[in-house]
Image 1 (spheres, rainbow, N blue to C red):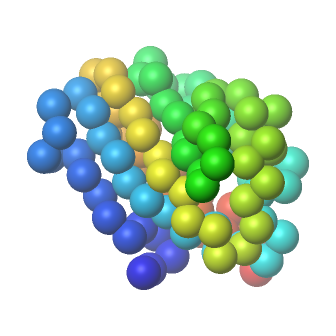
Image 2 (cartoon, helix red, strand yellow):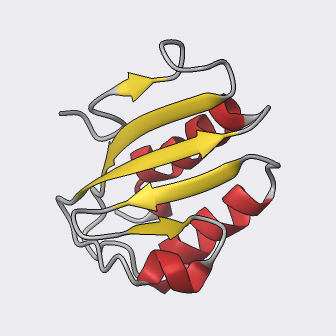
Length: 104
């Protein structure tokens, strides 16, 4: 699995749906700053965007929801979006994970 994604399923789904698995690679996991970056990025899109962990699925546009995932380093999460800009939304959020949210 790479830092950016394990699988991406955008073309196989309906044209307005996209799913991608991402790895939480930053050392501190999804704490407040990364959760804020995810929510801010997600809010820029019309698509409905969710993030799923092993135990729950949350609204990616809500910082508090994202924080409840309590995803630590090494966690695999699934980003799912539906709507006209779903593929771009998933790509942009995946890029945050790939960049480790600007952390080392």
